[in-house]
Length: 343
Image (cartoon, rainbow, N blue to C red; front, top):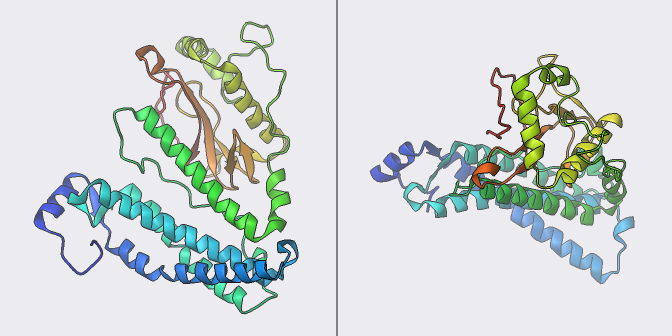
């Protein structure tokens, strides 16, 4: 089993080097240290059963009790995700067990790093009925930002990417749900985060005079791209191959509504605007100022994102790309006229 004192074999070291993987020793140490999270979730479940037997009202629990349930849940989920990512990688390629790709290493560390913090809070809350974790943490807490490419690529990259995005979204929802159950007082604010972000129903038809083919392009960059002949052709091709333009317009309408409501703004880097995404249709790069839900995805404060739309693969039988791309963006001189997404 990786993580024990056994030194990796020569073949394992060679295989991991060829794949560009790194040792997981530190991760295994974190795994062992974070095992206390299971003790805290067990204590929390015992507490929950006792409350149920007493017909306790979760809405009126002492803050320390709700905080214990919530913190134990967070520690458990973070520990579980880190462990499952490790074990899944070992299982996917037993030849390099004990090594993981750098992107997996970063994701697992991001999860394990926060386990001790939440287990400590759970213990403090268990001994202090007046402790309210909302005084020290913004809730509901979000999972660490997802690194991309956690799953092994397959022969259908677009399908692989869609599956990965849905899995990440499901885990985020699962993590939030446990916190809302533990502390129902969070539900009202959580449910209202997306108010005003619902799609506009009266959307213009593509063949109407009200339709602007540049509506996906950053307003700060539109005039520049309008003056570019290749850009005009690329945008026309994009809309020509969009199988569901109304859905595309609805997502953009939600983004525009969030911007108007002051929930998001144009992202900056080193004090200057990052500008637009490098590829057609050159959508703006935004930063979330207050947690908001766009296209069914909850985006916490501080996250950067852009709306990627691409028809590059459609003529070759591929899938049309329509997604929110979340991550850290940096300026580039690259220009993608085809609109093809790139990681």
